[in-house]
Image (cartoon, rainbow, N blue to C red; front, side, top):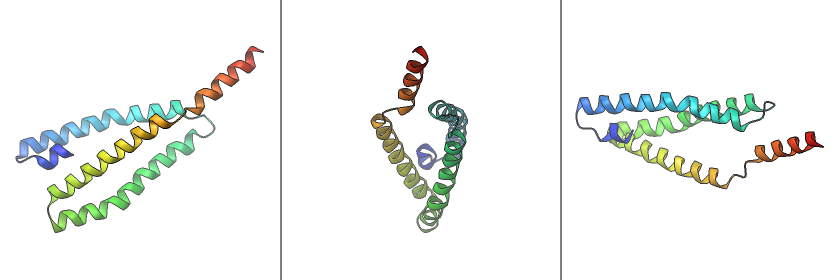
Length: 117
């Protein structure tokens, strides 16, 4: 998104858009695989549904302000603002990931210990 916002020519913008699409296409299955691995079968559908709803909520709440920035100033500024928000959210998710204790692993260890008895 940042490269697309800062591109001055059509070929640069097209290349940035194609690369961003390829990265998203590769990241989505990885994200879904990670979610499936980290959730229990009993709540997996709920988690996947909540993730989808959170994405839609982000588009609903972030789209109009980004559109307003694009209309009032420029599309490039709106894209830069969206890139900044995305970068901040990645930083928050990374920090949250480092703090999580991975309770699913504890459950698996307890179940294995119970079957060994």
